[in-house]
Structure formats: C-alpha cells, structure tokens
Image (cartoon, rainbow, N blue to C red; front, side, top):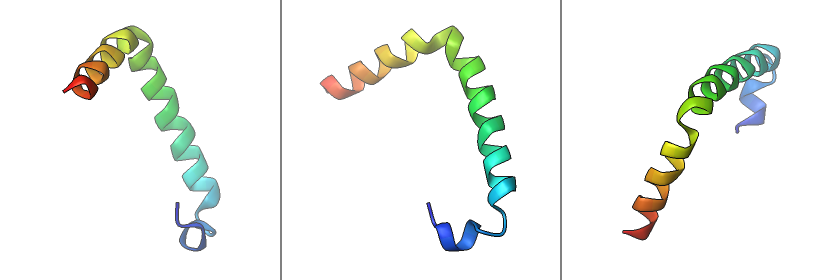
Length: 45
C-alpha cells in the first residue's frame, strides 16, 4: 500500500476495505473449498 497518498483518505480506505472483506467473506464462505481446490489445480500446473 502507498501510505503517503492514502493518509487523507485513511478512514475512507479502511471502511471500504472492511466492506470489501465483509462481502468477500460472505461469498467465499459458500465456495471457499471450491476456490482452494482451483488454486491447488493451478499450482500443480
């Protein structure tokens, strides 16, 4: 992360990050094992 640029928008960035993580975890909680399986397949290649 570029700290110098995001100092003014720190609170905004943190709130956006939390929101993104929340939505991400909601989606992943369902298909987490599927994503890890795909990642393992890609790493094998």
